[in-house]
Length: 145
Image (cartoon, rainbow, N blue to C red):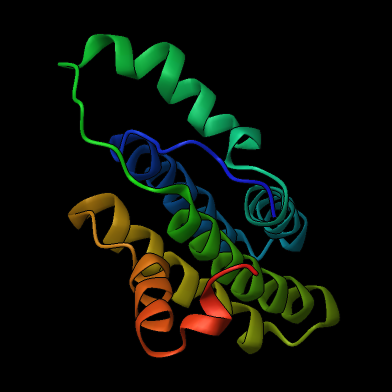
């Protein structure tokens, strides 16, 4: 897995805001196609690079220049892991909606929405916390060899 450079922590929170809006629209409309697009985005960010997130580009070019600069940086590995967790929930939700198992789609999408809202509103990244717990208690699993 390639290493992404550390990121401004405000960027992932901005992305979580947009993701929250997308997931809320999915819950309101039941659109498995929109959820499939979000699933693909989670997958690209988790398994290829965080640099493929279009909301990160919007943040860097439109939002960040208007904010007070910060030297605070966040490692990318926990963020990529969190994107992987989002991918799993969004994939289950997409399968649920697309196959007619609407309840499965609603539950999986709701779980992803709660995680995105916690990150957007409070800066609490549940996937990042899971990554840190895994690294602490199962270091061989969390660190690439």
